[in-house]
View: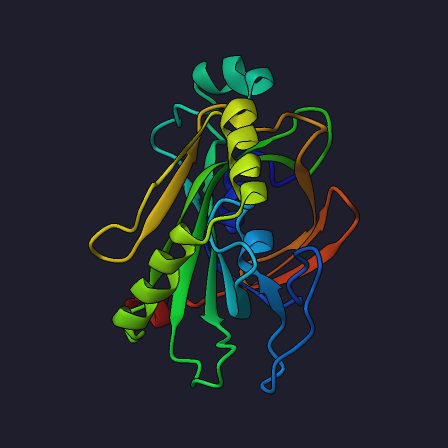
Length: 237
């Protein structure tokens, strides 16, 4: 059982997703075979322009013991987490993507999107972990064309559609979303959920198999994912 004790340490590390991405409404594949989605589908509809076409190169899943409990906790889990769950872990999703230019330009605008989350073991189901996300960030990677990045995302604010504004207003009301109004100087934008969705039996994954290099999980909608642990020697280099 990976929900506690020394066996739970197998979860810790940086994992690379080997399965295909499964965001909703896939737009097909680019010439390199990378799967494409809109930025909205990739980001809980938090970042604009929603309909920006992006290809995904890699998805990483860093997991580590959480030293401090987050301030944003689903209502049904608040008491359990605030009492000091020893099995609380950071559970982030880091996506490396490229903006697919529609005007024939080379795909030199690349970014990193991180969704910040947490997991706690479900006390009623063996090897099941409940998940919730507290926010996210999008930023250009070190090699991207910063001028082009600013041009794309600053232009989107002026062209924001009524439907997009309505979605964000609904998110603010239901989830208590705090969202960046503009790009930071480094090109990043972020959002935070004050009232995240989650709870045992609501948002979760089951671990089918896990050793020190391979993890197989089943999501709440029965999708199965395979992840490979990135060697620590690679991360240090």
